[in-house]
Length: 319
Image (tube, rainbow, N blue to C red; front, side, top):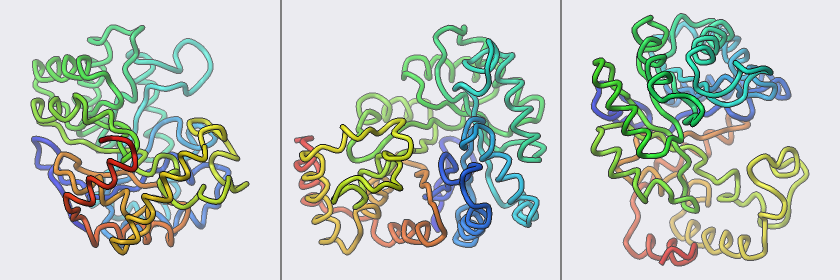
């Protein structure tokens, strides 16, 4: 494993982090979760990414990770980075969603209890909440650090102007925002529009999630929609109607490029992100230790020729 410094800090993150959005909820097999988490650590993945509502059910990923810590991983607490978040819907009523101080404080307390941790290494505001004054959300994050509930704080999916404003508010009180997190993959290039310049200006680390576009940037849907796929089971962010013949055609062409590099499409998708210096770490999900090990092989070839990059952009209509 290789590591990169996260923004203007002494903290290093592994190039690949283990995400627990899926595959660590109550509907998954605990023995598999534990094996995958231990496999991650054994292969140098020191960063485990959670959120209050990860599951399903919401909260169950944190509870299961707490079990994994208690089953042995916790003996390496000082060698791992555990991040969690709050900002999306978590519980019924007016205080279980958004960016209010009430919600953020209640949520981090619940998350710490579920995981059995005394503190998180990184705690994120999971989204910008337009109904909450930004200074209220920011002050809650500052106080979370000062109270010792998190060592660092970050922002996820914020509009660039609001993220920059939030960072400045934190700096005024001598608490730096460490890291910014957003969706980024070969098919979703939004961070390239304004985010990269903002990250450099604010000297933030950048953690990319959804590197495989919910499984599209794999061979998963080339021959139809498997019944055990994410689309078939939940379809929250990716729907059956999204898997069009045009999309499949592009995926097949990308797969040809990947095979020419000696990689699977999934591995090439991870390598493509990690070839960019501005990306500190990529969050990869895994349903098994075998799948995780397969993803780790992306680290074997992070170099892309100008011709390969041009071919990828042409297939995706970016040129």
